[in-house]
Structures are given as structure tokens and as C-alpha cells.
Amino acid sequence: MAYFEDAKIGDRLELGSFTFTAEQIKKFALQFDPQPFHIDEEAGRRSQFGGLAASGWHVAAIYMKLIVASLQRRAQEGISRGEKPVAVGPSPGFRELKWLKPVLAGDTLTFASEVCAVRALESRPQWGLVNFYNTGVNQRGELAFSFIGSAFIPRRPAA
Image (cartoon, rainbow, N blue to C red; front, side):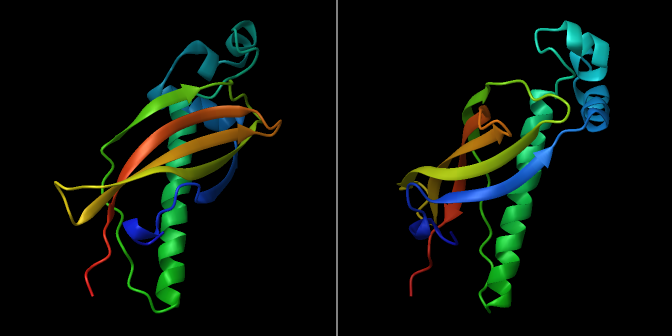
């Protein structure tokens, strides 16, 4: 989707997969979420998670890394076709963030983003608001992570 008018409910973007290693889990957690079950494998095994668990914020950060890479890739593809890149606007926030299954060392999540609502903005006629249902599914096909995010998307300029 380049412009707000291109966004259709149900449009889905596959973002890619990421495997969480014990080393990455510990490194992230030591800096940002130093709870025992994120930084110590034995503590993780003794916890309700049953193993070294990635911080939910680590999972969210990987989603962010993959969505930005996807947007950059799509912009570059457009440039190679001779199209002018369209900058996505800021996000006014997210809701319904859920960590539904623990992400343990060795787990691979596959992330996707799907348009779930679109709304033209009277207060900002140059923008539309698009909501996305974002997910991370583990290698067993279980939904492990989800949230609804919003983004301001530019309206197509008048001809």
C-alpha cells in the first residue's frame, strides 16, 4: 500500500521469521528486562515458562525490526519501478498487546500484519488512519504474540 486509498481490509503483509537464541534472549534481557527467567536458563526451567523465555518486549522489538525492513524493501522496489516513495506517517499508538504463548530459546516466530480497519480523517484531510492486526506465530502454528497498531497513511494527492 502506497497511499491510504490503496489500503483494503484483509490486505496482508508477511514480514518474515526470526529464531530466538538463548544468547540473544539473555543479551536483550540483561539490558532491558532483567527478570530471572529471561537471563538464567535454570531459572527459566523452574519458572512457569519451563525454559529460558524471551522478553515480550524483545518479541515486540523483533516485530518492529521486521516491519521497518519490509517498508524499506517495498519503498526500494517502488523506486526501482520509477515510483516516488511515500513516507508512512507516525503511529498514534497500539492496543490489545498480547503475549499469548511463551517464546523460548530456539523458537521461531513468523510475523505478519493485516489491515483490519481504515478511516479517513476529517481533522487531517491529508492523512487516513489504518489499523493493522499484527501477529507472531510460532513453529507449531500457535499464535504467540498479537496487537492492533495504528498508522497515519498519506492520502493520494489530488490530480
